[in-house]
Length: 177
Image 1: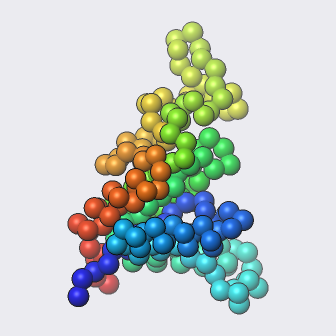
Image 2: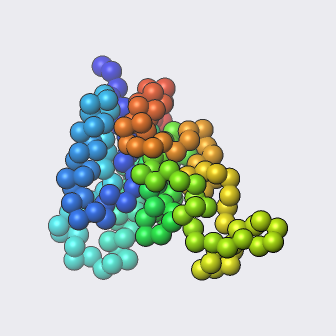
Image 3: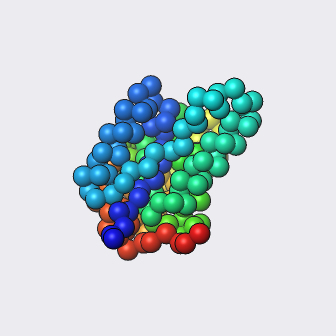
């Protein structure tokens, strides 16, 4: 029996007003590329009565379990509520890499990160964020170097990421247990 690779669909799609339809579409695209798309954990209706901290812990552990069962993570790092990626998504990417799983990121905004951050330059040409006064990373990458300079560069769309993920998933098998 052949293993159908599983791809965890990380990203802020869970916050979209039509989240289920969007995640179903992404999973369908995975299916067209011979993979099973696995959406982030969605609590059951009976969990809605849980205190917020317990519900948050349930969602976190559910997502961790889903990432563990997958062969690869496909992560949307499009700007979310600011110039950079969703922090939950970047955490999931790091968690997956820590488990030895390949991660492929994609973004709808491929401009260098520095171009998305309002900044000023000093006389030495260094860029400083207008909001916080901190240096703005300037490596010409679409996102933070910790995941944009990894083994796979950020891809310009989901389909491009999906093709790479399919190749990587084929060479990765989840650890037993």
